[in-house]
Length: 106
Image 1 (tube, rainbow, N blue to C red):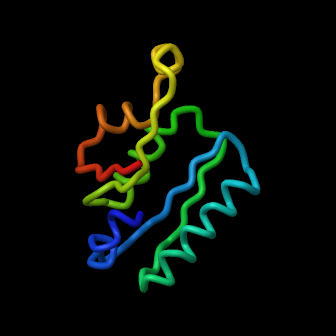
Image 2: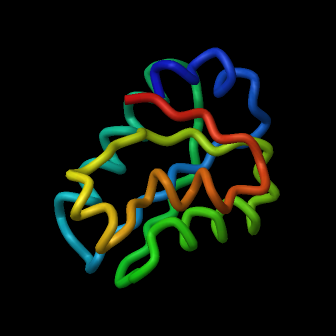
């Protein structure tokens, strides 16, 4: 989010999306912390928490589509190659399937 701060300040709407395997205190806490950080920088954000999702990339892209988003901002992370081949990766899937620009940082 830090890399995207200038763009987020100019946005008419910002939505934080938290995707987790199940309802969890850690995911909710991270989302609250991100919302608080944005608020300290003068950005009001809506929060959308999704739980029980099997396909994280599809869920993120669906949220972006439903919000008519112009940009997706997300962290980019990789895993060991064998694990990526077997299970895939959210970063790769979002980049492969996104219909809007993606700003990614790690």
